[in-house]
Image (cartoon, rainbow, N blue to C red; front, side, top):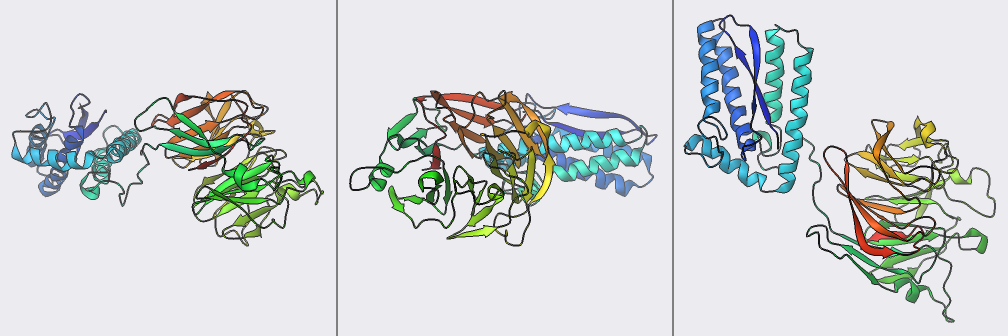
Length: 463
């Protein structure tokens, strides 16, 4: 952990000659140093204001602040960090250590301080070399902003904070119900214990759908070209091959029981569906009956029933939908022409229109991929015509992420900073892949011991 606390050394000529930087990366109590140092800096600025134009007084302020920092944890008089012999310094140890015991708080503190340090450096760069007031303003803003970080004075109990948006660092275990999209004979629960990093992972075969959908002769309907989503604890499977009259199927898996629902009043073959907190959105379906050339642009919202909503501008079949900026984006696809469209809500969709916010040549003919949202950015994995590129969408722009994903047509599900990928489009035998996003925007990657042999675009729900 690297933490740099910057303060201004003011000479008797009242000009700025240098910026002193303390590197306390080797000290185990850098968070306590930051909290203590912020209080020292606050006292320093009060002192400067009280001094007015008295240069001797301002010199005393500088020396007082230096002495104050020396007494802080990791300072000159407590080099090894907490606990400190100085009672005043030790109070920062207790306050911060209790808060930092939560890994979410510790993780977010590092990010918060790093971001504010970058802002401070940018601010200094914008100042003229001897512009004292500019440098003081930068330092004041920095000192005040540090106090907004988790475990500091304005967020003493840690995440969530009023003025800092904490990021989710929770380590989640994955327990997924997985069903092959070609054969009901392949279904079961896949468990990956991330917290303990235990191996081997487990796949336990189940037969919920086989038991729930077989007719009196033991026959099962086709499982192909359907779409899966979860909403309010119920797992939905909809659509299917419209050529064989299955495009309006609707099944629900709840409490390990499959319930056959009334047929949809529309066909939804090979479409996109995404479950959000209070709704599910369906777009980009196909109908063998040829219900018009714009069929793939039609969308529906589901809460407790399916309702038509505004159509997209492009046909995004075989594209994907992802949460974005308090709403959602629909991305590329069969005839999406590299377009990304945005809707500003996942619930208030009636009388609301999709907005084209990006159109990229790199995403032209981009299909059979999955999109997930992490830290407010959208990441895509897999592409029928690609070379394994992973793309990132942030600030309404697409960019190459840099790492590659070697399959396409897989199903990807995300929790927190983690993504699990299972299956492929052509049934290639693969291991599940677990990707975890790091602060530097790279993913660490692990593979399961379980081999998924010929699992085609599986339907996946959190179990």
